[in-house]
Amino acid sequence: MDNELINNRYEVISQIGLGGAGAIFQAYDTFLDRKVAIKKIFVDSHDQVERLKRECLFLQTIDHPNLVKAHEFFITNDRAYMVLEFIDGKSIDEIIVKNKYSMTLVGQLAIASQIARGIEVMNMGGIIHRDIKPQNVMLNPQTGEIKIVDLGTAKSLSKALSSITTAGSVIGTCAYMSPEQTKGAVCWSTDIFSLGVLLYQFFTWSERSPFYTNNIYATIKKIRDEKLIDLCTVVDISEASPEQQIAYEKISEVLVKALHKDPDVRWQNAGVIADLFNDIRMPLLGEAQENPHKYRIETARQICPGLRKELESMRKTYSTIG
Image (cartoon, rainbow, N blue to C red; front, side, top):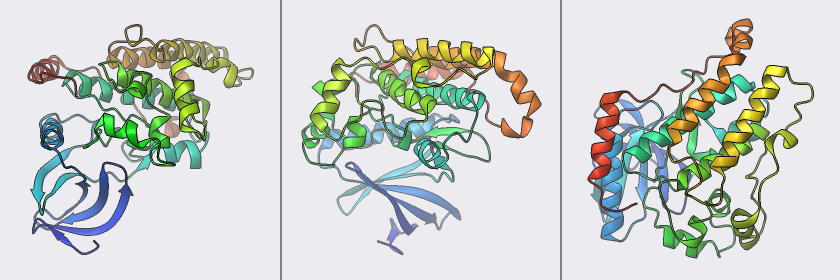
């Protein structure tokens, strides 16, 4: 597909990703002289296309620093395409696996706050991501901003669940599912559970989800039945400062509630989690003042009243979840 011109405008440079929902390419917008990301989406049903259009409109309408920006949606040659901003950065997965311990607790808390805020914006606007995982969160090292990408594009949950019996097909995604997702259901706190899984992995610097096994059914059983080991037991905090020890204890409390098996018991709003991480970070800011070059990452700002009203209006227009 290299050098192909899509929609008489976008020149494909290279493929940069492939998943069950589609392939993503780095491309050049010949009209506006800029790099973009183009997602070629494998969809067949009218409902999937309509949901894609809705999500594209959402990302075009809501300009938020923690969400990837969408530029255009179109269908050509019986394929659906979404044009997105090109993010030059690293995924949280890359940071965890290839740059282990590359940031301090202060930086991690700032990133966690931004991820939670991005999820709050999506959920308030009527979008459930369904696939929150380290690979779908990007960090721009220049700005310190994180962006959530791949808003469950063209993914039918029932199809995703039927395909997990295929060896290796969606094992990574499966390990971040909520208990209700493994049973073919979603709700407004589904993304909260997946956020909890991602952050547990991030704060423990583990290369895989804490629920991961090399067997799909064992992974699902762990998600449904197993309570994770307390964060402060997994992380060695014996040599941490008293302020850091308190911070880890509070982080653990936040994650325990986020990871509750019962959706009704979890935090019902990711914005609460964002605010809690901001509060936990505050007593540690003395470290940032001592080493300012290490702490360019800022925590997320609360949603302004105008945006909140707009998001609530958008959510009301959607009659069903998903």
